[in-house]
Image (cartoon, rainbow, N blue to C red):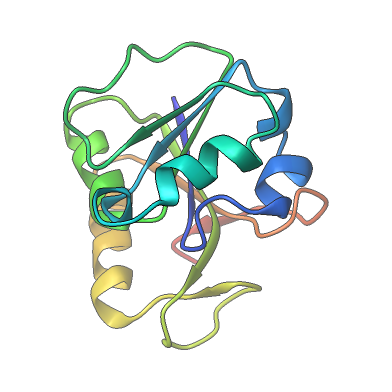
Length: 140
């Protein structure tokens, strides 16, 4: 599966620019889903596309080729990698106050280290904030 990561989770660029609106279903993984009304809001903005909202990596549905998998948490992405579920990670936005390395991509030092570890395990990591922009492969 291709896992998309954006720290804003679900928003207009995800739904329209990244084809989530044409997916057979959207699978959202976020620790924020436990403590807020974010889950019901996701259902509203998904525009009729079935939306599975999970507060973590437990009890994952079987991946389907038409799915659009999305998380806002690099730690959850690492869990999915370690479980053998992720073949590539596409980072759409990761803004954490570190050095800006690309558009919408300024990971702090701990997340840079985690990205390096994941890449060293063979995970293909692409940084691509807009569908029309070229992807950059991490590390760069």
